[in-house]
Amino acid sequence: MSARSVLPGSDFWHEAFAMQGAVAARLLPRMLVFALAAVASVVVHQRAPSIALRPEPVEASAVVLGLLLVFRTTAGYARWWEGRTLWGGIVNQSRNLTVSAIAYGPADAAWRQAVTRWVAVFAHVTRRSLRAERTLPEVVTLVGALDAAAVAGAEHMPSYASARLAALLRDARDQHRMDPFAFVQLDRERASLLEHAGGCERILATPIPSVYSLTTRSFIAVYLLALPLALVGSLGWFAPVAALLVTYPILAVEQIGAELQIPFATTSLSHLPLDEICGTIERNVLAAAAGVTTDRAPSEAMGATRAEPQSPGPGELALAGRGAAQGQRGIT
Image (cartoon, rainbow, N blue to C red; front, top):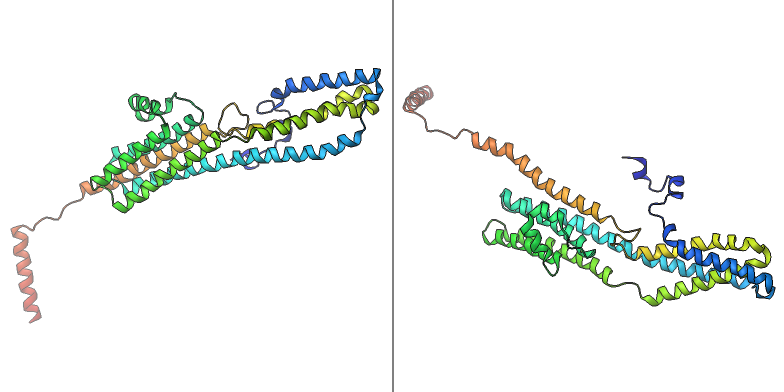
């Protein structure tokens, strides 16, 4: 394990000047607008010095602005973390369902493969559904083109995958190849997967109220437009430079808060690594099924070649009879 995976963020200089994952590129248009406004403030101040503002009101407003930014990023991170927690539940429930199905389900390799593959399909289609995607190459690989087309044509893809899992469990129970109590537990695990997917959809369908974003951004715009007027009296032509040094972190923090509100979309710089999470689920569940099949093969082979007890032949019976008679004479 690398040191970077143990202590994320330890490479200060690499991350300080990294372009990938940074919000700077998305802030350039807004930065340009505020830079032009700052230059215009200096030009107007040279002709009408009375437009300069006293710094005290701007300094006091900075405290309020800081609180608004904290609330915005906190609200965004809460949504991001809830999404990560729900996907952690999908990972755990996928493993639990697979292990329980292998342990308590039919000793049928085809049935086990079907269950594990549909568990992996559920994770992939949940990810695709959250991103409004209907192209399912992973599902084609797992269950074939015909079933993949059926999944893609379903109204709600995670529900379709869950229904296929439920049908496999029900068939095993109806054929008396699964204990009824095990069926209840496995079906509970399956239902839990769908509940976690529903939690993710709730986050996706319930954005933070727009009035909150409008208020924060309006306050930021007024503050950043007024800032050069508070600095121009003491800094002159250096006021735009100083204003931009303040503008960038304010806009960056606000943009980070907005990005965190959308944890599933690939357009967000801070989106959850759902591709990697689904890949982990697929590898884990398929390896679990393959491992059980491999582990059971030697024992089944031994059972197939184990010698069965045979009836003694006539000669053996005669020898046994003479030995028993001699034993009786020895005792008497």
